[in-house]
Image (cartoon, rainbow, N blue to C red; front, side, top):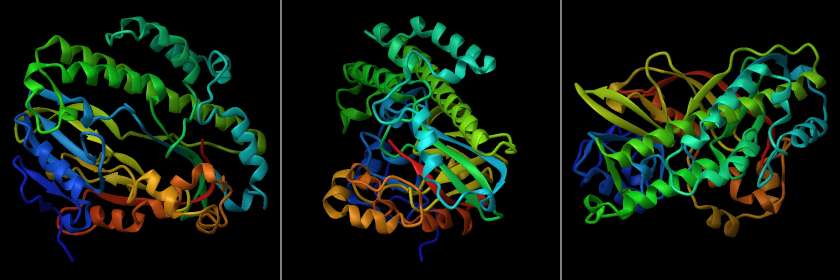
Length: 402
């Protein structure tokens, strides 16, 4: 068994992997080597859920000096998780969870759907409404080109789930208590902001000779980097508020079904984002793409798939990993490959006992399309250089997807 972390063979900048290179797809390893050869990279850390991404690898943590790569964040800026423990237990649930799922789906826009104007819960929650008004009031200050006409859509999508691997779940903790779990990001506005800045970065002269133009960077001290970070931080704030609005919306539904419910303070974490940090005495811009911050004491959420549940973890402050951990199980095959390989019957078998969609529209999210969650957790909780400790294991009971 490989002792983790291991250095990536052929990398230029310091590259440590909490994954066995022999078990990582060749294309992802080549992508990591390309990243390590960028002259601005101080170090690269690779999480156990690593897999091929656009430009930068999913499951990568990149520390750069005086630069930031847009692909190292991705287009779903601020994507992340929120989890809330309740006082409910599995014994409080009815035998049939179908009505609860239907009730959630009736108030939570999924897929391409959005709210009509803005999320209805904002009319009942003055605190969220104030945050929403303040954030959208700054929309006109965004610096990406040709973005002004997206304001109404951004407002309507705040409080919507989207599709793909985004979800809302009811999970049972190993102590019997129920948790509400939510995974989503900055919706279309984050994507459009990212794509506009990526297009700008690709035109800059210092990026013309890169091994992969998708790794184009902005340099510190330039107007382009200032504009990108300005819009990125706005999108990260939007993503967090999007999850807060959805959680407030769905808490109302849960309270209707279970009037005595009490909700604890939520656990929140981004896993596609930028942070300015210091390692080895060097000030760096850290991008986590498919990775969470795991500084000492940080609580984080690491989901698996719609059939496997999630983990609540606490960071150990491992600076060798740039204080990071994985963001999930990570895909082991592409969406198209999953659609070709699996059937609706396979999906039903792998999600048996879980109240969720079991149709062709979500075959690409079948549990077998993802890596084994237990192995991913073991890679970062054992050995000489662990990243997190397990706080709780959550098992999925109900899952809503777009």
